Length: 285
Ligand code: GUN
Image (cartoon, rainbow, N blue to C red; front, side, top):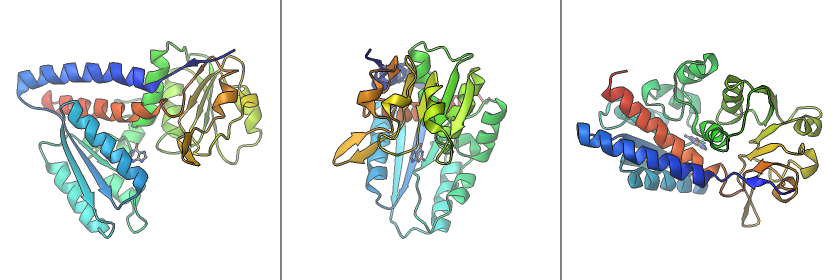
């Protein structure tokens, strides 16, 4: 058996088309466009690439885009000052400070400083709390992207056993909450989970976000399972996921390739959240 490929770009393109249409109609009506500010401190090469992609997508969709590239010596106080300016800017509807931050800056302080209304990453404790209790909020982009891909493929979640491997605030925890909200039975696994292989084998839907190349073996996949691999690892100049793709695709019913799987969805959902913020502001809701 060979699994069907669940490609993020197909879903991303469809959603980007919808964003563009909605944007243009709002621009005609109001003369305004959504604005996204991205802040990068230092020169982490992976972060530089992500930021460049965000800037490019923003512009392509017709958003107002600001990218603040700050030197590695920037102090926490200077960064917080910039965040405050962006919180107060009427052109900016979404603020994203690229993570990870350098050691001398406390991630928590920066996340707390971003206005919850412009927190299009969904990392502010107010948005996290709302996600937990099922209130309207900004949903972290990668987790939101995973759910949109499952919806696009018509994969039923109700009553299914979903196993999430990884418990990060950015992906694992929000994905688990979103699956739960969609009536899946959810197990969250991590580096200290006993019987990881066995738990993975019981998954109808397996979402992996651990950042360890090809850690999940083909023999850990239940026949017919849906496998979502969020990992992007560079191994010898090649990108591989957290799942052994070649082995897993022989067992799964659906699987995301790496690259080309979840990746394109993250930026798309960032644009969705920024457009949403713009609409809240326009319609004062
Ligand atoms: N670094 C890796 N993923 C993300 C993300 O989704 N948002 C931010 N701000 N930083 C990241």
